[in-house]
Length: 325
Image (cartoon, rainbow, N blue to C red; front, side, top):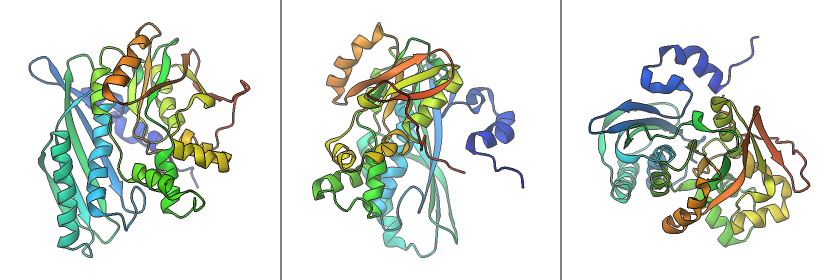
């Protein structure tokens, strides 16, 4: 039997030949097309599936918010201002009007929070799990969108916020971190269920960063995408990774959970590369937006991502990122 193709091999073989000019060869996580008045439009579609990206008993209003926010996070990774979104729902008949009303209320609350509106979409029934998809549209000044292909040797690698919380939060919801105190458990679960797209920070980083994207599949995997597309390598320091108090508590008890920080996915933080000269602007931006920015490594010549431990030795990375196939 032939080996099963992974997500990016499938894209390269079957879909990249179909790509329009604004699709960037399907090597980035967005498309960029020209717009009027010195603007360009950034487009992104992401889907979430019951049992894969959210749990069957998650509150429907939080499912709605997660759907919007994972898409808005991609716009944040390009410094885009959101305009609106299209929605697709495939719902089993067992989900009644009360579920849908709560789902719509969640969408409405986040539309107000992020200043966007629904532009249209489609709905259908399914015998399978709930499947939801949104296509978000944002705008950026023409020629300013930071791409995966823009990293340069010598750049410093930064991330926003803290890493690993959502992956650990899923473990909490699955009952796998029972020894953690209640406050830490609640914090981690909330980080899994309700991402925070870093839109204002991303917009402020335009003109400062080289490459930028959000972290969805996991730090090592997504930094690997930047490296592959830019033709560079990256070296990151495990000791520099920003951790929440809750994540630190988990790692103190179970050090092997570092794999969730490096490759667990669902962080929805910004991952960026910036020249040393321009990195001096980052502390002020972090203070002004209230979102920490932490230097975790450097871009080098070569290929691939290496994680260095406290002794300066390369670490094995057992889980580089989420595998879709």
